[in-house]
Image 1 (cartoon, rainbow, N blue to C red):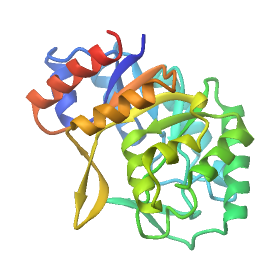
Image 2: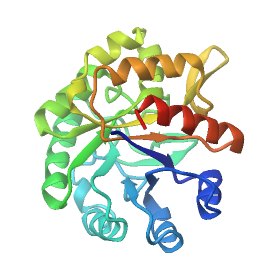
Image 3: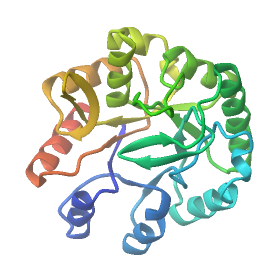
Image 4: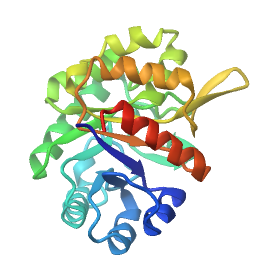
Amino acid sequence: MIALAVSDFDLPRSLLAAGRLDVDYLETGGHFVERTVAQFPDRPLLLHNSVFNWSLAHPTALEEQQIVQRTLDALERTHAPWLSVHLGFSAAEVFFDVHMTACTPALPRAELLANICRNVRALASAIPVPLILENLDYCPGGAYEHICEPTFIAAVLNATDAGLLLDVAHARVSATRLGLAIETYLGQMPLDRVRQLHISGPRSRDGVLFDAHAALLDEDYALLEWVLLRTKPLALTLEYNREEAELRAELARLRVLLGG
């Protein structure tokens, strides 16, 4: 059975603390790890990024911000069964502000691919659990060039043997920006590598689709069913943080869909 998780947002945290939410995992990451472990010492946790403002594109990514030691510490605290990290970004140095922004110029595609593959292999060999990479949602600002192309994602996965954390909303956003049908976009990636899913509802603003972490619509459930027919994930994480009734309803519907 596919495990059901929620992201470490305020609403699901408060409901979990009150014993009013039934999920298999809470997915945490970055600077939230210490707080989350202290509040939920016995709850199964997933670890998504030990550091947020960090890019696998950096030529010496594993030497930056004590990343290896911080990752090992986070894995020890959470006892997470695997580590998921962002596949990108296209710049060596980045900073999150609404979406990730490049602090340095975007790297050429060949150099970017070489850096990411080298750093993924090094990170995978430094940790005691499997490493999976999350596809991203194209945003302007120089941090998302090349990395959202399905052929680029496939090249990284095939060169490193890493698994895939397929963020379905990210895929929809990137496919739209690249002018591809979502089924075409996903069909260019090795879906047999999917180990985890992220699901949430994207929205359109000024005619542009973006990752809103909004409620799931029927079209989102239809796409999820399409994905589930072609993948074998170990877990699915709902990324939603707005209304309690909607959160509970979506988790109930997802539990049925996942065979729970």
